[in-house]
Length: 89
Image 1 (spheres, one colour):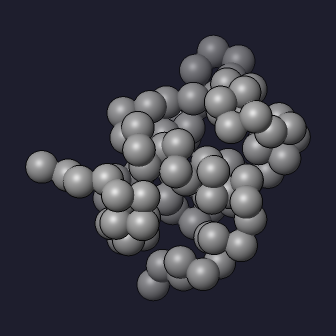
Image 2: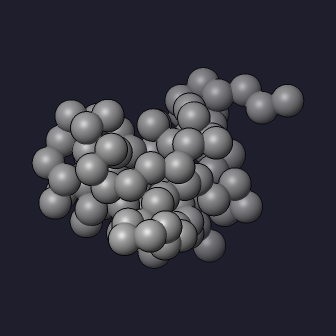
């Protein structure tokens, strides 16, 4: 069972979630994600890994980097769509 409370305990994590939920086709590396939410890359890396381990994000290796994207199959995604006001057709 997905634990939504465990995911929203960090401002950085919440910013990353909003970024990925509002832009579902987005695939970003650590540095680009950090730049977009104006945060420290090391902190963003840690939070991206946490979101991946919770199942809400997925990753794939591209050359020498890891690209993260939203995992639409995760049961935790619909509540965040509602929280961030994202309507899906």
